[in-house]
Amino acid sequence: MRDKRTHPSRSRNITIMVPAYECAAHLKKHSFSLRNYRNLGCQVLWVASPSPDGTDKVAQQICNETGDQFLLSPPGLYESWNFGIARVKTEFVAISTISDTYINEDLFILEDLLNALSADICFTPPAVIKLSHKEISELNTWPIFRFADYFAPFSNKICPQDLLTAVQLSSGLSCVLGSWASILARTSVLKSFPFPTNYSHYGDAAWFYKNLLSLKFVFKADPIARFRCHDKPNSRQLNPHLAYLQCKELQKKLIQRAHKKGGIIEDFLYLYRSYRVVLHKLNKTRGRHPRRFWWINPKAWLLRFLTRQKNAKLKALSSFLGY
Image (cartoon, rainbow, N blue to C red; front, side):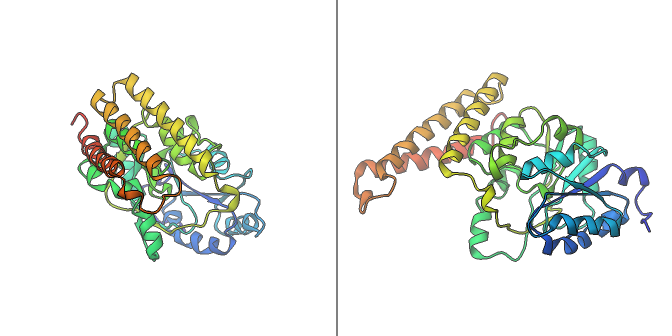
């Protein structure tokens, strides 16, 4: 029976989309974690790709038991996302990745923020649980954690595009938005701007590079979902050299678009370029496989000092651009 605590028209505004691939053992537990939203009237849509472990069959069985919707999607991570989003009929959509569970019913708070600010995407930092030291170290490199102090003043507000641009340029192929399990988006926006499918598991970062200057992003400092680290299937691994080239191309195009739009001041462009030049020289001095005692070279020490100095200025400037 549906819970009547939430106004029907409100709960019908959100679809929770659950992409699933090679995770059959975790589906029932994940389905149970969505029971509150299901009882509050939100639509739950399972989008499963054909999987060797029978994930698609288990997901369909769950839908038969719960009344959720089921779609059998084409193979591919972001192909599956785009396939599901194209069939969502509600105004807002949340992407609930397997094992990343909602803490409470705060998706409705994100909906209120998007409506109040006429924004497109609301993102929050994920709450992390039961992580190894290695996983904690990896997550600490995520932009949404590294630059938390920069985002904090804009909680419950629209994030300045200059800040988002500066942080993303400093973050390579790590997406500023963090985990999509901690995000609520306007469905029309994701339909108009689908996820690129030629960047392997970096598709969300590529999507942000391409669209951050066209959309309004709201930040909320309070987590709404728990995140668990996931193993990436070998089929979704990207060649490191190709990833580097794609990252450079995305950064170049973002700088060009931002410059034309007047979103980045000349000082930032100059500082960013000079930082990259110095970093390149330092890496060239070290060599691909740093030789023993490379640090004795005075030139290396000077380059390292300049790299740190410019990086510090870059980070400081990126948090105050125009504000």
